[in-house]
Amino acid sequence: TDMSDFIRGLPKAELHLHIEGSLEPEQMFEFARRNRVALPFDSVEAVRAAYAFSNLQDFLDIYYQGANVLLTEEDFRDLALAYFRRVAADGARHVELFFDPQTHTDRGVPFAVVADGLLAGMAQAKRELGVTSKLILCFLRHLDEGAAFATLKDAEPYLDRIAGVGLDSSEVGHPPRKFERVFAAARERGLKLVAHAGEEGPPEYVWEALDLLQVDRLDHGNRSLEDEALSRRLAEEGMTLTVCPLSNLKLCVVDDLKTHPLKRMLQLGLKATVNSDDPAYFGGYLGQNWTAIAEAVDLSRDELVTLAKNSFTGSFLSPAEVQQRL
Ligand code: ES4
Ligand code: ZN
Image (cartoon, rainbow, N blue to C red; front, side):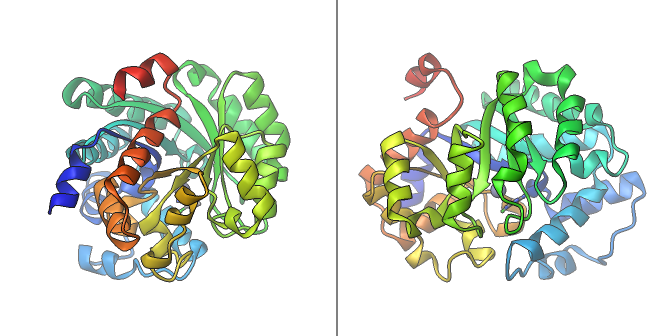
């Protein structure tokens, strides 16, 4: 359609993408076969049928299970490269990707295997597709802060190749304040800071991400709109929100895309961006997230251009690099 052609032609950045969430069922079988890992599913269709979630935890249980097939540096490189090919076809020029090292180190896969594989895929994507990228290390919030500190220590040899740290996994019951010290340590090391907040958790968690973690960018942030003072704060600060429409639909954060808060965020002057989160699990890559939300809330061409611009100005590219790409 005209709309999807227009969207594909807009240079865009993706700022909220869990690389483990780009593992397609076909690839899950391929990695399972070559690594001799048993899968609890008989077929690709059976895997897809299991992707019916009623909340974040439902999804996380199956997402961590899927990650068990990832064992070697080649797996992580191939995973990243397959994602970059898809997102390049959607018109993405830059990606800031999350990875969850603890999901792998806790199964005995060394941090270096994960990081070297992803960095190899990122370098190949730059050479072959012209897509640039940055890596963001996420701490799993259902684990304790000591485990996050151990992960930051694992990352020490790679800190020149890691742009920032984030916070993901089960939100409710694991508020940002639990990670205040490790985020301060990451800040002292010159890392950028982001956190998932206000996806399922209350506005209070968004306040904590701002005031205690001092994040540079907020992942999701949907529930911020329940708090007028918080919405005003985010607008005044020009805080970037990485919004994930199809994720919100599949995890029942919204009932219907037509009532998705993105439109209101833009009307309130919030700096929102559109992203895919876990595209293999939620029914679409970056382009599909853009077309679905544009259609559902009737975004104008001006609003689409604003979203594309926000994706670069909200990135961790330098101001000079952003200028070159707008
Ligand atoms: C995630 Cl959608 C979402 N929320 C929180 N943590 C995550 N990890 C991967 N996807
Ligand atoms: Zn996410």
